[in-house]
Image 1 (cartoon, rainbow, N blue to C red):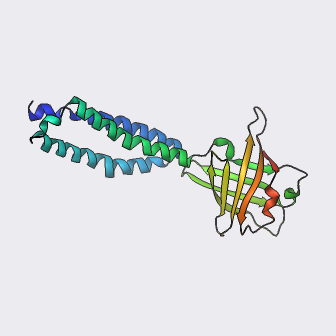
Image 2 (image 1 turned 180 degrees about the horizontal axis):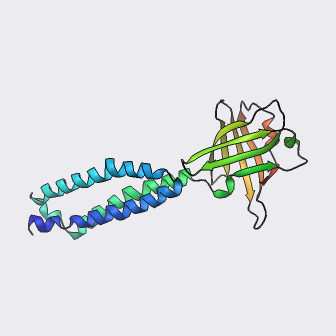
Image 3 (image 1 turned 90 degrees about the vertical axis):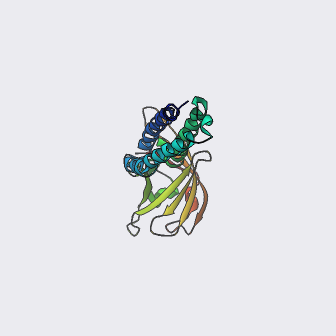
Length: 213
């Protein structure tokens, strides 16, 4: 088979890259709306140069004694590998970044609990524009300002780790969230540990109940 006929198999790679990159873009868009900029950067810096380099490599191979390795089967295998390299890391990024929707809410402290003497709301916020995870406590005491924090949530263990945005404190809670159809969701927090929590006795979170607002 001539060199030109060998090169025609490159369309398999092109199709695989285009389809994989479309899937990549859809997944990234689900992570954050501004992910289009990341996707565009990857396209310009990695995908397009990679296609050019791949074509040059294929051209050299097609003119060498290894040209017999260029066939529909081998190119299909390469296409599958490339597709996996594009899609699989994006899937892992999605599951490591996006939090279950029921976690994010303005959680109001249910009345008649000791912790409600200290705190009125706990806001857990996921910004789907920039994929940032922030939040804040709204305290009852006028001497305590609203405290902003960052957080990470581990879905299998249902543990949220909250870190002070401007201070070095840390708080770990287990969340038991009940999704109620037609009415507000409810949540029970269970205290696990804290480090230098600044505001009140963090163990008050243990067994505290909250209602989504």
